[in-house]
Image (cartoon, rainbow, N blue to C red; front, top):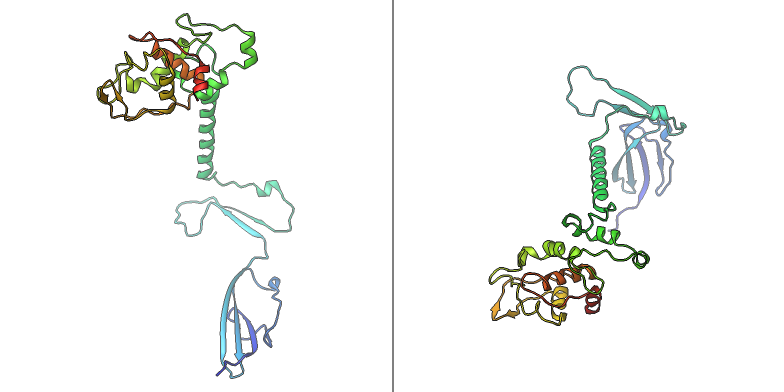
Length: 282
């Protein structure tokens, strides 16, 4: 047996006993909210089919035609004591904007202070991290590890062509002053494993002092190891557990300086290289 189709549908507002209107289904009707008090309301729909069976649906809605009201100093559901200073204000949607009336006297929200602190901390870090380091400090251990600073302070190609290189007086190869930053680069990137004196750690990190690769006249193998890393290779009959990581993230100049420092320090007296050698090995 087929269900009977609805014959009529009545529209009620809130708990009114009389409907706003009754229509033959289907229908379209207009609800004039300007005649309804602001606040929460219910629309009740009663549909009656040919057998007299009634179906009901309730729709909740909120009317807000009047001016908006703001209250500062008292929150809904708050527990309070003493004397309260409460600011109240109202705005209508069709009113022109008034800065004085729109100004709030409430406290600045906590999240605003947090965001301001985060922005200030980031600005301070950025300024310290990327400010232009004076040339006399750029090669010190404090700043030599900062690749962004090193790149920012590295003279442009045109400047290099105009100015004669200033050597440290300790060691240079083919116009490249490796000793100016080689020792500090080694201290930052290598000494934690291989030691300040290049002695390494038995069975963990190999010694660079007297190492056949570091002492070889051909530097290609050492450059390759520094660029790509190494693991599981037997050195002088010994196996070392630690993995040599890749340092390809360093610049050609930084790697050449570190390698030259290793090849000319401790008991090593090997031929030095230039950044061009590293560049070709990449």
